[in-house]
Length: 580
Image (cartoon, rainbow, N blue to C red; front, side, top):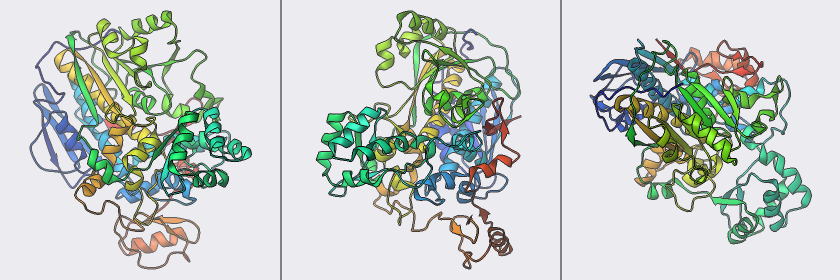
């Protein structure tokens, strides 16, 4: 498909320059995040707030986004309960736990911005899209989609799902995260600290699968080994083995170094291109556009997955032999259920990027694409001759997207993986109440939110290209995701105020046969431990309190009307937006 753009109608420097933002209705679930992000993209805020947000002006007739909590939930706490977020986050602790940060609402806010940008793109391409609907419940289901897919697979998990996991604590009490993708490095690190060989061997599998299971029941001997040495000895073991360690940082520390940068950066290419494209289908704003995705793990594949749900044709670039994660258990029809959650519906092409011939072939494909997306290690694209300067020389209209760990904003930062970024940015403090240790969640919070921000950035880049005729480079990162998630708590810390929520905040309430969740700040009028979950919910409803049962087994969600099955039989969550 040839690149598609229009001759410049205006020369905005930001995608939404010349557009106005109007909000109305009752308070919206996403708070000020939608207005903030739209303002960063150039929209003029005309005042007001609410769950309905309209963008209009310039060559656009206007798109309205309506964001609601959903069918069963009434706030963040109840959303986390009914979508399985509490269940997944609580696996490390052995019982459901609520995230103290407004994770589902934050995700819904980013999805709302995506819906508005996609609607504007559809209008610019001749469609009659005028509104989009987003619910926080659907955002929550999207956040747990990989875990949900695994719960509905044909086989059991390959690793034990039992309480336990990082971080570790040194002899003087420094709490730290450990990261490596290499079992040899893992073994060398623990040998340097004197851990027993059997414990090292038994610990690798739960460590390796913690991204998939949200828990890691390590042998206790590993925690003992870490606690037997001072921090400098731990750091030396990491240096000599090739592992990475990161001491947990507080929100106050993050606030002190925070540079105020937006969660993404858009940089227009010098060259320009003009062309035309057929209008998309009403329900597929990106129909006819092509995305080349060279992504691995979660962040970039999720970005491309959402672009595919919006109608783009996604061509996944995989190494010779295919993506090894295709076979990661549990599987459906022989394909990893988790892999399908992020990659179903994509085309695949095997490319050996170490081969000059294959790199030339990839550049030729990028010359005909609309978006090139990757999350390679820093510097790798430049070394391969596949950076934005290289690809935009052949395709001036290209939207070149890089979803990274740190976006180059923290010199000397450790490996840019989800849990390391959580550790370095104070996320562990923001997501846990004051009576819990401030440790990162083993739910992949930042990979998912980073993928959402990557999609937002690509859509903004496509819209800017549409309005100017020039290609764009867009950069997003897990660091940006962390800063978005912790914004309110970090702001409190910067002012010297209490940054953490009070003890027991969003803690599910046990019943005789399960758990219930109350809306934030609602008080439980009586002990529910002698009541069934159904009885407890009924009695609270009689008192005007909208309590909900807490989903503890994600398989229970599979019978809900919103969850479907793909061609492999793997569970598929619904698209997070509806367009009309």
